Length: 169
Image (cartoon, rainbow, N blue to C red):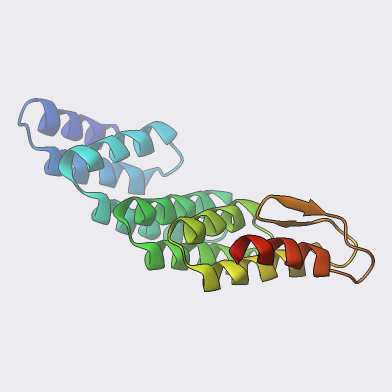
């Protein structure tokens, strides 16, 4: 792995070949996806070489190799954020949805997809996120809808829904 990092360094600094440096650093990531320094260097090279599309593919490859777990989840989140950076709202949403299929209570993924739909003004999809939050909260827990906190009476979720509807309307 260290040799790939050295290849990346030489390719970038001596050969002025950022795409080649990116590919070498990609191989280092595949060998050891646990090193945050490798990820940060790879993201820096992706920007330099304009390899954002390839970076997203790489994150998916790494997550698939890792299987279920926190590290895999982290790479799937990175892939989703990368799609957002590229302006691919549908692809980003698909990545967040995949995370939510694996863990419907993933607050970070719920918040991210909520923010994505708001910024893209995809109101129908945003309503779906609200419904998901309501379902997760249950009848006796506080329901958060677009920043509003409500304490619904047992079985009465209308207060939280009305607060969300007022903002959407």
